[in-house]
Length: 298
Length: 331
Image (cartoon, rainbow over all chains, first blue to last red; front, side, top):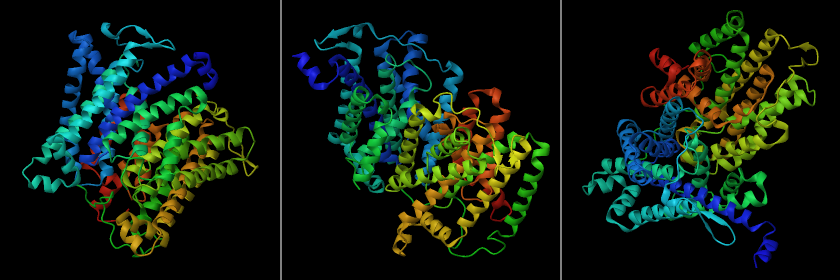
């Protein structure tokens, strides 16, 4: 049976499924990060260039909680997003909120600068070689699925990322809070006129988007080594994912994120030379065919 | 939340009004231009010529970038691709094909412009923030291409690029000879940009920056204008990269990396978006800072970030813009 599949695929099954799993994990991070970007963009109309740095801060917060406070993975999963989200709230209050009346590009430049500062400070403090973070005991080991070995932690990352994505989608689409959010995205002045504190909502939305990046950071900590550049390497790909999906739809960014991760994994199997560029090529093709993105509104 | 304030903080006055003076330079700009030429003439006798050449390469790069953001309002976040690729191709041509330096520089510019045709054609389909993200992603694609492509030498880059003989006659091995070539290329590029900005084409560019739907309704095909401006900017960025690789004899991944795209934004922002002399001043500040703070290591990144934040929050006109505002002149 397995031989038949391998003959059909043209590559050894463990290689294929291994890369598919890696792709799925990358996709999980793309999805969570592009989701946070989309939520922030929807309400604040800025592209949060600090997102990569905040993803990295999430991972570092997990490392610090363990090394300095002795709090393990599960505590980190709870506390790190809260801490990093809180720093996001402060950034929004202090800096970003001053720019809403200006061209959106200034928001981009400001968050780019903030990202440089954060990354530089972490690099001075921790060097750029990276720090190890242990997989929690509960998620050690691997399952034998017959056609491949699946490390339990990697499976957990995919499941957890799906959970957080779907939870975010449910909050935005199915709750009253989410309805306010969607309304404010369309017409902030009108929502404010109904007596809702829109500036506070904007601040909290930014905090929530940042917290989502931090969750992704905690999930990533045991897989990649925790290092100051981990976010900046990822974030440019995430921007391409955002362009491909279009920022119109929450579900769209989740599907695009996972889908592109899988495509990237498949490319690694069949044409490894292109694996680093395939997402950008897809972006160019999508832009030519559908400038608004797959799920975007023109 | 959205507002129609333009990216430049400087009121630009009536679009279409022809500036008086020589070659479109007004009085104060003419004085600044003469000062700049004089400075170019004496600089290599007071400063290390290689440092000044580096500065001029980045200044031309920043001027090319400013042509887009300052006059058309397009923020390209991937200009390192054209700069770096211009450098790679010029370096390869000079080293492997034995091309003379002037042809290598022209070739670098053509490569930049050619990439500008394709990438511009893709990117101008979206505006504003999307445009920035698309140009950035395309540039990252070029970066990965350069990591893998055989002719770029991967992590090592192209090394020992010969400066060759200008027009096959004048050897450029001495730093002073190379300096004059660099200075002349910079001046040509600088004047060309100034000429573009003050041409009828440039007036349409500014109209697009101020209000694109209105420019469209006046019958201008704004996409065509944006594409041509993009190609011109990319071509000049390619020239700047080509000269840089000849000056240093090396073309590396640093020049195509995203941080280079960020640096050129910083130079232009510090100097003053939409000012003629701003990018030059901004390049001097950023290159000088890197030079004198080299031992500070990663703190340079932090300082750059702080400058970004300070410029955006408090200092949107940039150095030249502020000076111009102080003396009520347009520089």
